[in-house]
Length: 171
Image 1 (tube, rainbow, N blue to C red):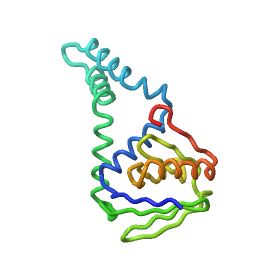
Image 2: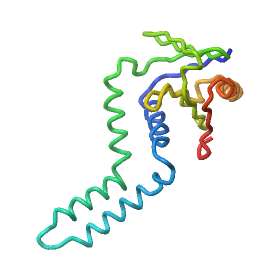
Image 3: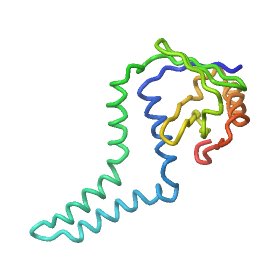
Image 4: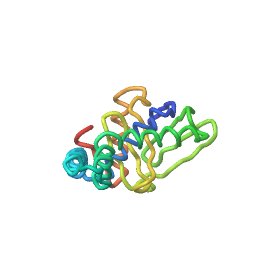
């Protein structure tokens, strides 16, 4: 049996949401977002005429958002929503064996059979356990007593969850 615990803070939520968001779009599309944003800004500036064209304003604004603001806006909403959560800044304890994983906090207890999870993504700094494409549990690597416990936990996941992946960029 593997045990661990961590404090569920806004930083943990941001890290988990950043990892989950990076998995939604294909890597080739993610690499195109910033160049697309820069291209839209340049094209908008080239179309700039007197009087100012609304199309050029729109293109520059969209390009600025894609290039500089997209991640900041997403992180702002994660922080805003986290502040409303009743489980913010609570200690999460968990145990895992070959049959299930159990979570407990001051306010709740739950156990999940491994069959509940449709996908696992192992990263260097933690694991995302997906119940479906939108719902996931974040378990940070620092929640374990040692790196060996983290490796043992990922081996349990590898054996019990059919769709186990390691993120090549971050594993």
